[in-house]
Length: 303
Image (cartoon, rainbow, N blue to C red; front, side, top):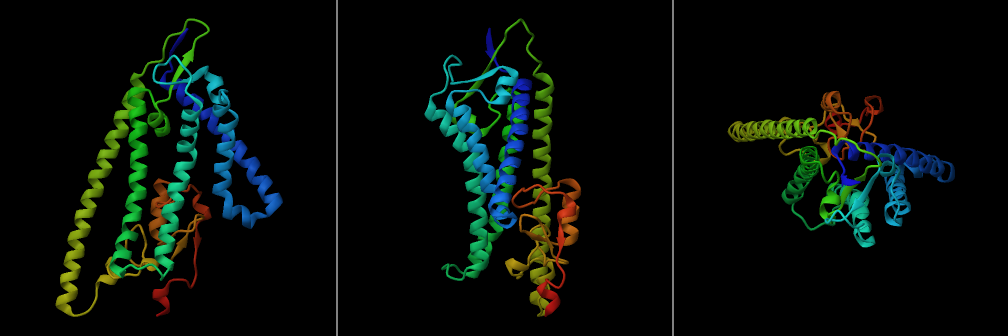
């Protein structure tokens, strides 16, 4: 007997696959460190993780086989009809969108940010360069919001756990070997609505902070013009991009380095990590004890 796979089965399947992928990434990382050394591994670790994920999907989904997680809960990939297996090109497209697209997008944003901060050959005015640098964190946050909204929709409707499956129209059905009751969708729907509520409240709070910051910026600009000296330096205006903290938008105080290479104020990044132990810009996860306080680094102290 076949039926559409329930929310609980899909979640358990992906949890199982995440465990397998984590083990596979660890094996690849250990092998890379033994062959190329730790420095090259650090430089290419994200690319190696993508290679491990692609290999797993090539050996399972793209080879007409179930993943370990899918086999664990007896679910099968189907097309929109829920009666046929997806074609190979559709499964390959799903694999590329699921694994490669996020990596390419994040890498492109990071390279663009580094290029704007370090290269002088780009034919852009300082104002345009600064505007683009200010937009990049917004783009990263927007990507995170889209993923969270999509996850909330999955909890509510019970289909399309990944955006890649929604774009390619790939569903799950479950093969029941014996009579079994379908898990209730209600608890997951409540979780989905709570997630949406959290997103809306976060957006409203962020909008409020933005309005306050704009008013404060305008007030500081007027004050600096009337007093004939620049006070905006401590309020996030006229600060070079390489000296600005992405969290408080002011000049970095006690610069602190994350494992992914971004710089923040010591206080700002620790307050952020108290809620989420990840980089606010690239979302790379790390424990707080891996933050590195840089001594004699802040340019403002050397003036």
